[in-house]
Image (cartoon, rainbow, N blue to C red; front, side, top):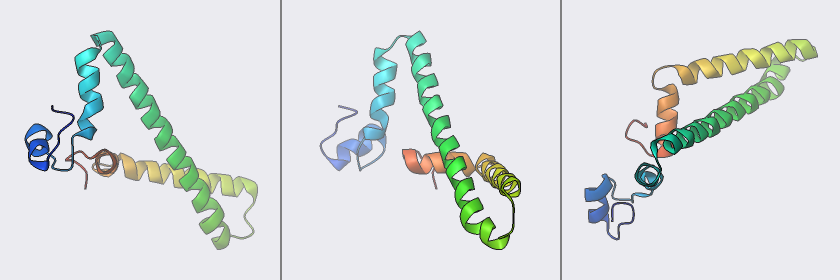
Length: 117
């Protein structure tokens, strides 16, 4: 009854969101059915998937910056120079998302938590 609610008022009472409680379904399932050791394993799996997603976001953003923006600013830059510019872009993007509110605001926006902006 907490995860599947039929009306907006019931959802608001159960999980605090009138749109539905689907964002709490998986955590409630894991916490209620799995023993503590498997809970930790599931947490590790979810965090590994999150890290993989963030790494791919960083890599693709650095490639887009390097090939679409930096190459136009420095058309005669060599491959090594472009590689260093891509690493610089990835580092700055990671620094921005690691700043307070950066990563957690991003995750909150996509996961539907109250910390999202």
